[in-house]
Length: 362
Image 1 (spheres, rainbow, N blue to C red):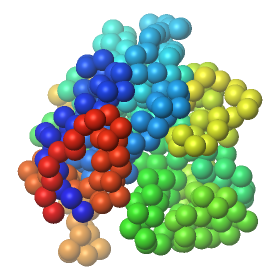
Image 2: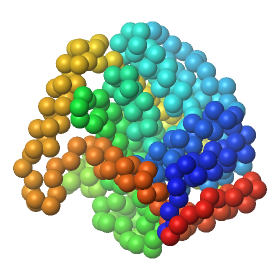
Image 3: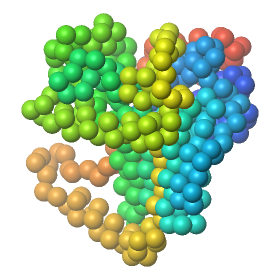
């Protein structure tokens, strides 16, 4: 395990994107999305993903200087074509469009096609916080998830993120996969040589598994809930909603046709759309009630939930976003810890572009 200072790690990631051909502003934005994941403790979607973007770019599946454009719109909605760009750049640009529409008509909703992996959904949803807007961000993803009662991989981990401003309290930020665990968590277990908990994955025959490599052997991730008795049909339904809004609505590839994030897997022979899909939205609070009044009540909501009698005195009830805020506070001060296999990936990427990874501490 190595620990990197945020500023130096951010500069290195930005330099990699520039070396790939991204304009400086796009490289800065892409680096910000990745570093925000590491700062918030979502290590599976931070710099651990950098080598994946590089490999996709080398395969010609990422356009580092795309023409991101609106191809259809109404006063409150739009469809954006990402021109095979980095989702790390395409999604924030689409969210800017959604917020501008919300500023004009109260709400704005943008469906995005022809994009790629967009990092943590929470980053895009949180863009509305400073503008007194509730932010939404969904994306479909590589088909790794079997629907309830199924063996085939039909859906991605398909996250949902919602951010809601408050007044004196920190914002409510829910950012979650619609699976029991995100694929990135399995990758972390693989690097650590640890087993997965029951309910995360199944083997190729559809039986519960704990081997984090089960996906490579034909298995699948499980919807939120793990099995029917624990509500996996609800996780399946949520993942399906994300897939439909992100891809069927936008014109992207959906279900088992969604392009894989790993570069060594082929694209579907019979694509049904263009690239990966996202869906983002912004709701102006004062389109519903005065923003100050709403935020006062959000503070009360948060405070009352924090006062919930806990099961154990050692673990109080949390508000969505609390663990990530605490991680960010610590990591901004103490640095970002990165496991050795990811450090090795960073060295490999640095070697490809003639860069140096920043200094680190143990």
